[in-house]
Length: 66
Image (cartoon, helix red, strand yellow):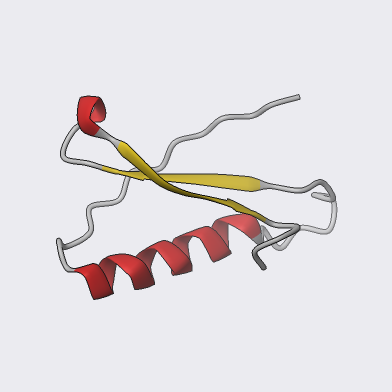
């Protein structure tokens, strides 16, 4: 089963802020805090000015990146 959700964040165009925000976001999303979620989770991260110009910058996995 595959579940897809989308969250959009507006983050200032500052490399340091962007890097820190991405790390916080993926760590929170991969650690839901519910014992009944017992399967690996994944998060894909893309950036861009609009949906057409999105560039994927990373994929993160609960069983590898936490």
